[in-house]
Image (tube, rainbow, N blue to C red; front, side, top):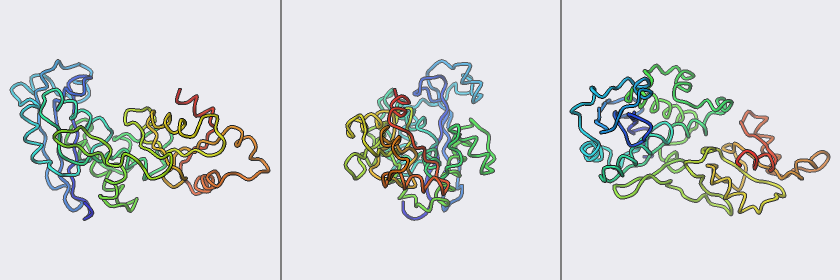
Length: 296
């Protein structure tokens, strides 16, 4: 995956709130940084359609009548996606396919998953306010024209956003896979390819946590033991690191240390975070009690 930008972008739509109720799959093959071919697969979810979902994507029960179920679709796309890099936007798509595989007992997809939302969060800080890293907002910012909630169109937009993240970050496809990749096989659901970052307290955050995607560092004297603080942050989705870098999004400072910084030397992590903030990096510096209130 180190040779530029060959990957398959993927998006799914569902019939209702159950992630396993897939009714459409969009697949867009990117080759040498451009769209090579596109495919939309309509699927019979064998589920009731919720009017809310119909209102979002426009797919109705009659549109999927007689279409294959995921039991038939999985072997076909599994062969096509074997050992591929799959780009998607947000954890929804890879989770939906894992849930559908469990529902039908077909086994998962043997591939590496790359979330363009996480790539966007790590590449561009300007969207941090209000958490506006949604597909439509990013596409608007980068002048990507697409029909939202059409599976193939959403997949294409996610792929184009990922290509821009590669260009702007300077990271290769392989480097992004090492950084944010999730690997799945026929026998196993998606799991982070790098389960533990090097370092004493560093670790990956829970993908289902409300702060998934935040990169956090602790400094100073904390009320909690550092290992407990790291575990609690990881449980709500934060990736834990031992040092401040351009990827850091939150620096948590012990309450006492933050109060006594006037006239006293700040920690090296604190000073580095402030330096990065002055250069435009979107790092929030918060005291420990405020962080604990935020995750409680």
